[in-house]
Image (cartoon, rainbow, N blue to C red; front, side, top):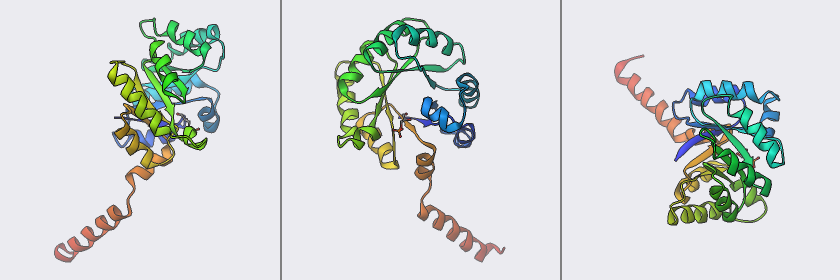
Length: 217
Ligand code: G3P
């Protein structure tokens, strides 16, 4: 399972990229707002320079012609850019058109059911982003949507890749991997929690203390 970062904050991307395990980034209008910028193009270009892998940039149009027009521009921003399209009926029309272009990579976003995932895949999306946390928030089982979608894609040899999105805690990452997600897009704070463990810190300290006993300070 590939690990992407779900943020538009350049400093967060630089830090996690320095670990050497970052394979992509996803942004959306809310994440852009949290990063305090409306300049999607510059941010996308900067992210691509740091990561050198898929960077999702989302359209803000809600009608198919508007989405398609935006996608034409977005796809010129950087070599690895992926156009994020909401999974609505208008979105499907736009996905179908954009994915017919030679460089037309689409990330179908705001997917909340296996049926939406199936439709987005049929419309040519390269990635389908299932919003686990938001599904859990309304009392349903986000991971079950990932599991069922993975089974359907596997059974019918559908090439679209499942992105586990709206991840809220480290368990979501582990469960996404077990449920068959191809990618998890992870918030910065969750990524930090994934590496931190108190027993690792205690272990490192003890090793150093013991080493000093025999080797001197
Ligand atoms: O990638 C989707 C993500 O940004 C949505 O997360 O926490 O706003 O549901 P959240």
